[in-house]
Image (cartoon, rainbow, N blue to C red; front, top):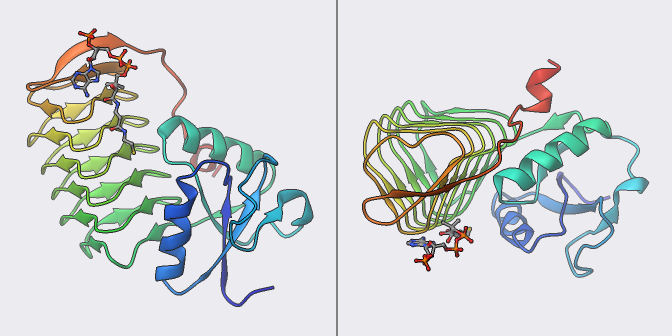
Length: 218
Ligand SMILES: CC(C)(COP(=O)(O)OP(=O)(O)OC[C@H]1O[C@@H](n2cnc3c(N)ncnc32)[C@H](O)[C@@H]1OP(=O)(O)O)[C@@H](O)C(=O)NCCC(=O)NCCS
């Protein structure tokens, strides 16, 4: 076994390569754990989940989307993985006062302001920014280059598209989807898709259970 490994569980989506790079940058050894049997074979230290008996080791998860991260968290919780940790890329800047929950992934070049809160298994993608006192809910995905101002509440499971902007003090409902490049000037209802500048409602999407399985049983 490699020294100071960090397991990456659920590695079938290409986004896992970003996670691998972040694990490398913090000086740990990525060990990719395939629990679906369809991972790219050249992922580093690829092992099949069935070969791992000690599931109390630290792990992060691979997918980027809210649904993907939620489904993975439910699956790994059910199969005994007990120790989700957060991965903060070494090129990101996360204020010391930020409250980071378990399972969070902060990708390269992200900036998070003072007193923000990042919920369980949330994913802040490349070069996005999250302002002071903003609350990012569980399983939220903030897309590459998105700009989330201060004092915002983003409900669990919401998806913020690449390059979107959210103006200060707005609320984005659970499971809402903000299209790429949108500018959000008003509160967004849960499970609603908005696009454009200013953002307008395009449609609604089916509700899903955004509960963190680790918090639900703790
Ligand atoms: C908003 C979004 C989820 C809608 O996806 P969809 O339901 O498949 O929507 P469609 O592609 O069918 O488009 C429906 C309409 O919305 C428009 N539209 C879609 N996305 C838009 C966007 N981001 N901005 C403005 N208009 C958009 C389409 O042009 C289309 O308009 P029309 O009916 O007049 O032709 C998607 O387009 C999007 O922006 N996803 C974000 C992708 C992203 O940022 N990924 C980050 C990867 S990490």
